[in-house]
Image 1: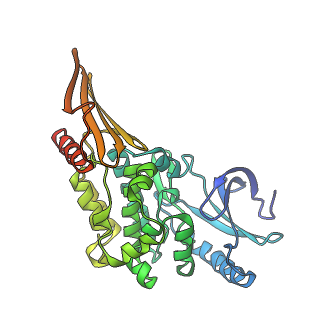
Image 2: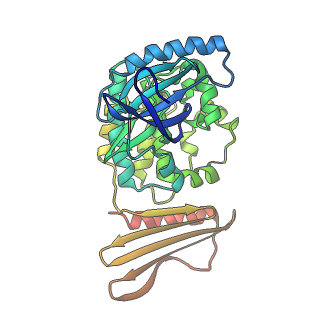
Image 3: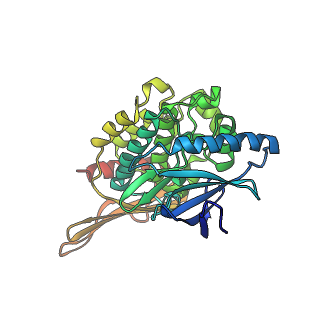
Length: 349
């Protein structure tokens, strides 16, 4: 399909947060990504006409956000025959982090790199007087070795709660959004904190252990203490937990004051030991390679009240040695978590 702008639409790349995403070719910019923006299911033709006019205007504004950690917006074009808007952006060869998040927990070093890059891009957006409103794994993209924030400026305050509910990201909305529909740079900080939490734990852990229905999340966030009730994989160090609890503070004025402040807090967070964690329903396995030795930690959930864990070291010319827990011995959930956390602290730098 060709347009009068000479923008050519090619293969489909996937379903984006607002519609289908295609690879395109532009005579000036070369390979680009093209996102088709169409009416929300509940929007009337008149409402879409109003919002689409706003998006066309906003597209010109979004072009001003030129930063290495922001997905470059090249323009918004209306396709007259279908009345669908085409958001044209730079093409990121690594795609979004949604698939990575769904594969499982990401290493500390990788998450730290992502947050460092994304906080810089988000800070640039804030410096231009804009609020993202939809920070989540699917809106973070990788290009080469650089992580970028994309899909900013597309969610309006009017659509925010309904959109987050449909996408399953109500917990990315800070208390003041749920209470008063107020968005700001600090509501983006909250969403960045929840994004970090998801990347550290992966989707399977999140779905199994958070155990909150869509109706329960707004209630819990409104009443306060949401961050204190989040479950943690036992290898996540305490400095990371304190850092994210700050980002998720109920009081917006006690969160990180800016993306720069958030980035400064990242600097001292540990990334060693470099545990590789694989989580599936009812079990988790951690692997740590130390020179010619390997440490493997296994955690199995036989029932809510019966957990089993053990840790073994192999290599270095020695036979496999049990260095923590006991195979075949079940303990309570609280005891297993306590002992696993103590073991990971002992194995720390």
